[in-house]
Image 1: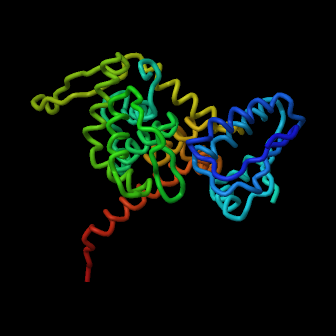
Image 2: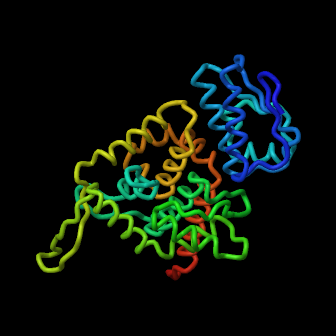
Image 3: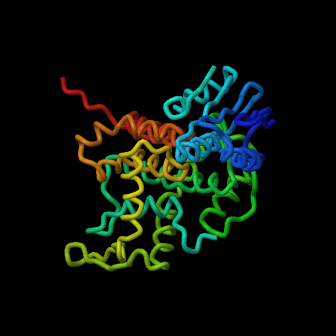
Length: 94
Length: 223
């Protein structure tokens, strides 16, 4: 789902659909304000390739002095993000 | 597809080879290089959208050949496996072919003119083969990329995060940094490495292999 500087990821994100989501998000980044938020509240599963989307988006935004915010992950996704140390690079709001 | 671009396995081998001797760097954990080579192949397949992983398993998302014979052989083997096997178990399995994989990768680099194949004599009698770099440009480029990433606060791209994981697992960071610098940069290195699940599986596999060696070493008791 797309709303301004926000994007919502739902269900499963893995190597079979990550490219599609990455392309959708990339299209929105130019119009993003100083921060771009991805709502993870309905995200149930994410693989390694899915996680790389966050890094690529965060890198692209940082190059434009903007930042990525990952919002409202469920406990499983939050644990995964913390285990991978994403919180050291990307702001996570939970 | 892979005619010019170096694969992670090739980049790793360029760093693992000692330029002066043209041989693999002696390391306290020689098996770590085999496991890292296995990991580099799986990493390359994930970067090319053939394989995906999570904390529990590794799975094929496309069995379409990449055009690189070594990668395609690994992809075929993983695709043919019917049971779910963890990433670290796959690393251990593929690492068993470490020596032949290393040689295939070196041969590829020789064929492309990146390494030279030189016959040497050991003790003036035994013939041995060494692989010094032709120009060293490729290896310097990889080293420069890694050094820049580690010394900055840049968000790593996946390929660079993976190569840092490979270098840490093979203890080759010691060849890039002094001990004092390495101490200071350890947190940054760990942050970069930890971002990728395969790097964590790689560390686990190396740790398990090391533990097996320790467990199988007879303890000498001095009474």
